[in-house]
Image 1 (cartoon, chains in turn brown, yellow):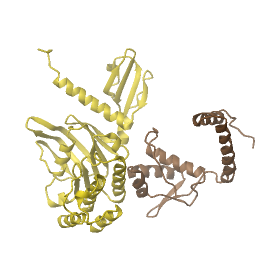
Image 2 (tube, helix red, strand yellow):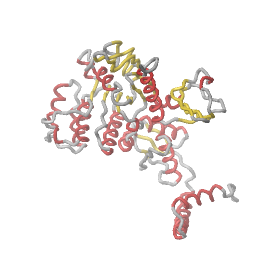
Image 3 (tube, helix red, strand yellow):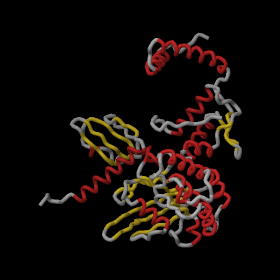
Image 4 (cartoon, chains in turn cyan, brown):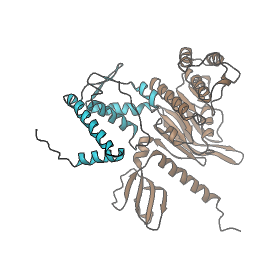
Length: 130
Length: 298
């Protein structure tokens, strides 16, 4: 089950952070169709936020068709992003890890590695030949 | 919709000093209300008026649509945790629960026992030997087990370390998620309340400076930054709370229901803390105006 963590200084509201964390878990395959999200009581008991904040986040995810609430039982994932990419993600992650190791050995610090990645990502061609 | 707290021109005077004045509020039920203000602003006075420990010097108020402490039933619907979460030091936890059961008609003994168990506390332990965090949890347990419709907490986390603070607020939010209860809690720090509250009352210099649902407050307050100019030319719907000028730049915190479209201003969103500080600054400014001698120094 997914566990939310909230960053107080990120400037992103707690409700947005929950939405983003669910989406990211769906993209990375940590959450899959059929999985249950923690109940509102479980979330607020861990991160000490107003229950309405969690409800608002869940409602937005529901509105986007990603989760559905079953009254009295809980909230479940009913839809995800393209699950066929999960298999490819593993090898891609592995090659990224190799790349990061190379960057470290070349003497780049964490911020430089991140900047290099983001910069390359942003300026790479958007359209791929399929 | 019924009101958790409804006050009209409420005031409380000690001798010649007004601890609270011209307080008009209508807080709907179903909220977690943060009462924020500097020390001495009148927070405790307002809360004591709400639970019937004080009577108003002027104006009127109802709590859950009845006068505070007007009947045993009315008292039973309100849980109150006073400042510094007081307990009886020489009595055991079990005796505290026993007393709660004897004094409250709707006492939920199972809930009380379960919570003490979940907190890992020994019922035979004397309350005087508990840590600050444990004592706060005991006081909260007593207030919750009477199954109130409104829970009033005066600076509940002020004396707790960060971990105990987090745990206390987490359990409080579990209570909100599980039971149909409205909450009013005070603090002199916005950061304590930011995540848990959805309604805010800012009290400073004995007066309510602003109040409302936090989402609405954040949507209607902005910071304007632009080249130095007079603020008198702003549209009438824009209300300036605080402003400062440098040689070339003007910065203002404003409230406005309408979006600010003048391209000469760059409009920034505010955090809850910015908003509270702006209103406290305004109150402080007004206080200084009042005490500033008129017609110069003699």
